[in-house]
Length: 277
Image (cartoon, rainbow, N blue to C red; front, side):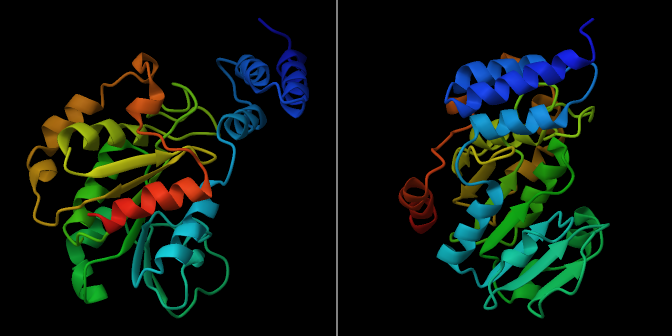
């Protein structure tokens, strides 16, 4: 077994290679520096930064709010309120989280529902709250596939052809951090399975994933509020996709429908997706 200092030594060497622009070699050392049966969050973070350069997911969200200026916005999974506070003053926004950890007051145009998302949708008519279908939604709640699928199903019922859904944690680093059971601080869970699920079960949807630090951001448009296919086949779909092995994915670029993390390309590639739905 490697000595206690070996992971840190590999980590320091990796940082030197990354600083010198030798990304591939640096990433290889970062992979080696993470113990198989232990945790090393600094190495995971550096690894993610190296393979997902450019704007992080919060900056992408800020950009989308500024470009789209949505009239209505819903966020599932609020935590500290960092992304919820990105909304403009003209946006009617609400957050859903059973145990938010927000310090301070939220703006008057933001309403917080302290409950599980399943309970929120069972008790509330989102269209009535907004007086219209929602414009923009962000899913970043419980990090397991079946919950994300339920959140998407529930949101789509209140969508329009112009609605856009964002899902965090759709591009994992490796199989360990992409697992359903959390064993590391850096963790995406198996949220990523929503990408192949929607691509194959709902080919009518338009979907792209931005490799934004730390774990990717998926954008989905072309929603159909009348569709009940996912809801009707929910049990079978969960059984089918929950068994996917992350290590078996060969071409991750194609599998996750990746687009470059570049402002101009995001404007040219992603915003037209919404406009042309």
